[in-house]
Length: 321
Image (cartoon, rainbow, N blue to C red; front, side):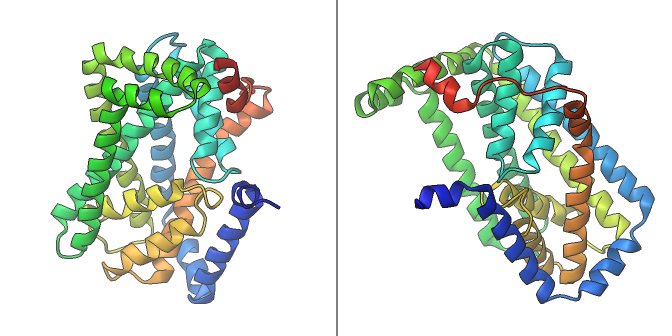
């Protein structure tokens, strides 16, 4: 079996999740974790769940704003967002979710390049604001946040900005045309055409960046509600660092829905603030629970017959070539 097949197999993601989560359970007090979750305060849990639902709608409208052309109705974006989040539960990392988003909007708009460009820009802004949020939290909580984390996020932010510059630079594109195959250049040319639509939409990009920052802060507030349900003694400003880091590693396509990786990040980061591993794992489990329950509207839509009926991304790329 080829290495690529093994690495991209869903079973590999499940194995990684089970092994990592099993190790965490082996080195902690499982009974204490269960008791901590059992005694969680329901009003704060409900607030966390409502925050997840509100953030899903908010992110869909933010994505709708970024669609450069062939824009469907806002409710279509909301519907696709919920369905893609539900489908993403069973797929490794963020790749499956983004593929589902592209497929869903392409099915409605019949404009694959525009759908792909909107998801790409939305994801780039998401990563930028994740880095900005961590840096902000690092500055506000210097006593508990290692300077290495802040510096690492500053470097990531600089690389993202550089990558955006490369994508939008005509000189970089000319260089790519010289080194890439003709078939690949043909597909990239269509993508660049859609990205160029944003050149005259600078105000939309700026508004989207601001909305992305608000979205990241909303996710911190959501986790803060869950922390309050566990009566955790942790600073909100420190969560500004912990939450983006945990949510970033959750996106890595090496586990299923970030299970195991997210918990490991939570334990490591919250330990710096004096939080017990059992409490950190409990918080991560509650985060996973509200994210899954918050995606149930997507499952209901699937049960009612709604499908992301666009052809697979690979077929779309071949069609564009």
